[in-house]
Image 1: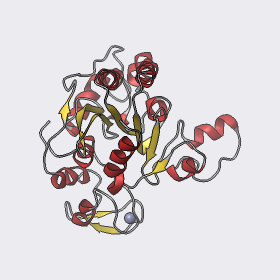
Image 2: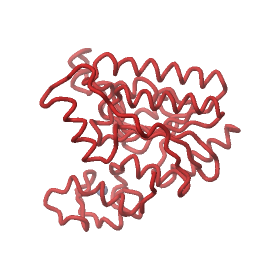
Image 3: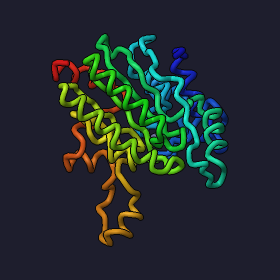
Length: 282
Ligand SMILES: [Zn+2]
């Protein structure tokens, strides 16, 4: 993959949700509503200088932020989704895929490959919530499975950064649900072989992604104030009919209850991952 300038990549991701703010210079922060000078947030890897809100960053930007410059080598970059069910909701799935590909520059919601983190070689995967909510269909499941299998063969530490609000991709029906089991089984074999899996949860990590690989890390990191859970609060409330605690699907709540191991700010993520790899002797 060509490594572009992280600054311009961040700009590209900031362009979509404008809403009345002059393009490219200022951006309203969804966390504190302050108007933020884009250059200021760029310097902080897409984090609000006023309130520490962690903005969306694309999968490609994640690679630039986490891996050493120019070390990423993409695996299975040619896998494309198909439309086995001829699914159609508001528009045919086939057309939706084309539109999402044109808009995001991705073929599907995950990028996988190998690269270095402070000179440690790792297997690296990342999902992008901009592509059909970062949901896991057959391509995302297959790319992650192959990533895990290569990490097992090559005895590499495995890092997967999740940004998936969509969970399983309903447009692919049961084929999408199967991916949860497939990826989890590959992780079990990786674990038996003694691998180290660091799962990083970012805003949002929900549904079938949270219910499979994202929760199976030997170490689970999360960015501050990320939304993490399975079903949305209204669905849960309607199902179990009890009042849910405030903020029960945030990183902070889940840290307190032992679901995640550490909250790591974006500016510290690369260093913390490198430290964890060393600490675990991988
Ligand atoms: Zn803010």
